[in-house]
Amino acid sequence: MKKKSIFSLILSLTILCGFNSCQDKPFDPVDDPKDLLCNGSGWFRQYIDYEGFDCDQKFVFYFDGGGKETVVRYLDDFMGSTEKFTYTFQWSWDEEYPYSIFIDYSDGTYSYFGDMYISPYELSGVLNDYDVTFEPF
Image (tube, rainbow, N blue to C red; front, top):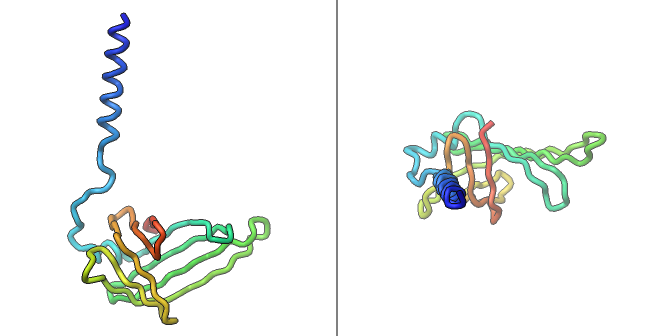
């Protein structure tokens, strides 16, 4: 009886480990990452800023190399007051590092989005030294 319990436990653990080892993200690059990046809608994430406020951030990339970023900062849960910032930018692929882009804002500042993973369901990577994950909207 004890051997049967131990065997069942080992079998259960083997099955669970097998399911858990499936890879989340394929390692194969997508055929045309520009098609996924500029999918016609945009990319969205929620985060808490350095002052503790909830924020929504949206990026929209256009095929012509332009784009728009919108950040909404929620200042007060009770009254619903917000601040909204909208920025336009030009973006380009980094030739030295695949799946990395430069974002040049119209005010002269820039961002770097590196080690990007692009799928129809997720845009993730390192944006200005922060690990970020966006979902399509």
